[in-house]
Image (cartoon, rainbow, N blue to C red; front, side):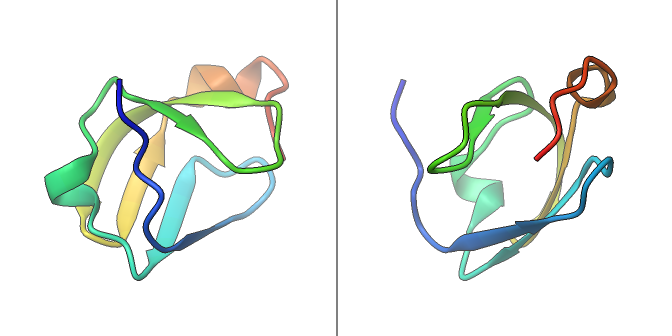
Length: 68
């Protein structure tokens, strides 16, 4: 598994939405991929990719208390 580290992301507590800045999610991320934010210990699962700057995480990760 390779790491995709281009750009930055913004997340809101208890929200599955991820907004990227300077990201290219479509070409580099696939539904089912792991998603880890640098400096965090929570490992999320990507549910879907909307476009290069928006993706959605699995709600089960958030329901399990995995919020940042």
